[in-house]
Amino acid sequence: MFKGFDIPAPELDVVLPQTQKSFRVRSLRMSEEGSAKSSLLGNAQSIIKKLNHLVYNAIVDNDKPEPEQFLQQVTTKDRDALVFGMYQITYGDEYTFEDYTCANCQKTYSLRAFMSKGFVRSDYKVEDGQSILDKRITLELETGLQVVLKQITLEDEVNILAATSADDPLTELYSKIDKFIYTSGEGQKLELNIKDTPMDFLYGCGQLLPKHKKLINDAHTKEFNQYGVKVNINYVCPHCGHKENFNLDFVKQFFLLVCGLI
Ligand SMILES: [Zn+2]
Image (cartoon, rainbow, N blue to C red; front, side, top):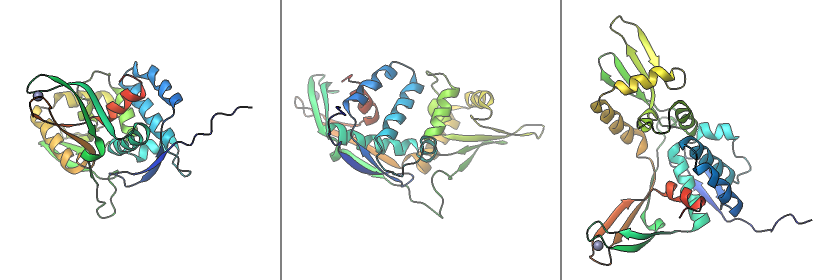
């Protein structure tokens, strides 16, 4: 009986920048590419679920955690590193953008770059035995209103997407907040988070001012989000010599490739 071709999938070790775990991932197979297509047509929630599923299934370590634990123990920034590893092992190092339009001369050209050349990683250093998953930062937004920030895990992300609508522009802000601690004028103390009190949490977020959002974003970048991987693409326009420099959204690029859309 035919049991399939005995083709070994190439593998790669990936050390996660935030939690320092290490996983071995393998290349995707064609059957997995096809299965991603249907879910891309769905909402953000199903895209994220599909992405988590692809990443989890590509991990070949015998002692890998159960799916639920994996979601709890891995951050979104860690997933970026896993996706980058899967991208490299599945599709190779070259990034191609056909018909790239130069911002200066407006002429189009085919932009080709090697991702490993622009790859930058910044690792979180565990301080006093405190993992990034346990780290919390408290900011005073107003008298009586504190916000506690955290690093989002894959589980948090799934919870946020379940509690919000796909086109909610504040999703990214929610993902940085562990909870609000609010003391009302009457001295009543409340704690709001997206898991236990989603309606109040979302309503509270909507009442914040732009200056609060900036405080939250700045502190979160400094304490959490700066740790991870990124790919800077540098390229010179062959028509006019204009220098292009951008951060490649390789997670999106990977998903589009998986779905056969580019
Ligand atoms: Zn140009």
